Length: 516
Image (cartoon, rainbow, N blue to C red; front, side):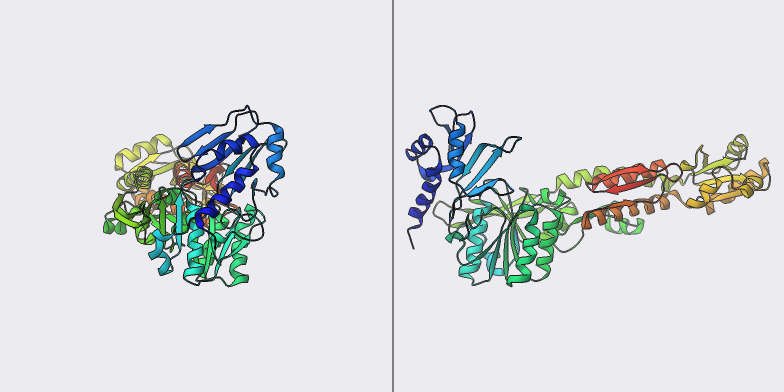
């Protein structure tokens, strides 16, 4: 084996060598170990990015010839506009104009750092599935690579790397030695990553699968399928914090998924909480989660299920903080307290508004009556005389019940047929007298379905439909017809799930349609 540091310099020199001559000469006079990126944009001065800042290379703007000369030395660019140098970890990403011509290049240094995964040695040795979160450039892929090597070489596990952009195992058919004895499967296009994930499990009997950047619903579902087959998963995902992931409708399934649940009055009182709450839908795909703050600092959530549950209840949780010292030692330096403000604040604001509306209705139980063929003036007078908890409305979409006379009911004219079709109660009077109306009012309160029950059922229907679309994707779901007030609440609930909705049809059959 070669000397690790010398090998690193040799690999960096391979990237520097493909740059325009004036750029490579400029870089060679600097500290190669500090090189991060080379930026070549047509018509602008070359930019060299070091760990301590950016520097412009003198000699004028980048020309088409210089860009073309660099591209000619590279392997073919893939569907993700990335290319590489065989058996290195460097990544060259292209910027194209509208015609597809390359007008810019980002040449990023790739490094294999043995031991970078040691900060998670306890999780690795326990065989936990681990999800890594972090901003671009903080070392997620570097750590992922070393974890793959540790599982393969130190723990003698069968490891398959699903390498979508060849960042983990490097460019070319022969993988970089930094992954050890782990095997690598390349991915034809980013869109087929989830298919290769499943193929890896079905065809190559892995004990560990390593994936860089789970970003779609299909990939999240593939990850869950793999975990359910008993395979250890090590992966990265978009986001910097666990609380970010909890808000992400696409990726929240990785930590168990979040769903809204409407409790009964009794259950809400027992739990000392509001009627509408958030709960974890299922077991997390990943048992542990690591927030990578920098190359040397990490926040560890060892038990994702417990942490998510506590955050959803509004409780404070803590994450273990670890760092790699300058001497390479792993140090635990206490815990950081975390509270899910972004979830609790949003949920409290939105669900309180709905709960308040429900409570107001629950207290009053106002019955909204639509008179059809019945004197409106007499009905309003009867409400006052009987002290009935009722009010008069003008349209079927706003009504809890209809008050009508026998001749109208026999013909099923006007809104009566529509009311029967959607289940709105119809009360038939013998005649249009004050006495008859008052007698009917006294019995209505006990027979008309409570609006709170109607609303709870309607919101539960919207909740179930939203959850189904988030879980399985695709298609549209039409809800049952409701009045305008309830539809508005349904729209609000759907929006909270990150989905889209519209109202369809004409009154009184107007209903909410939901889609992703």
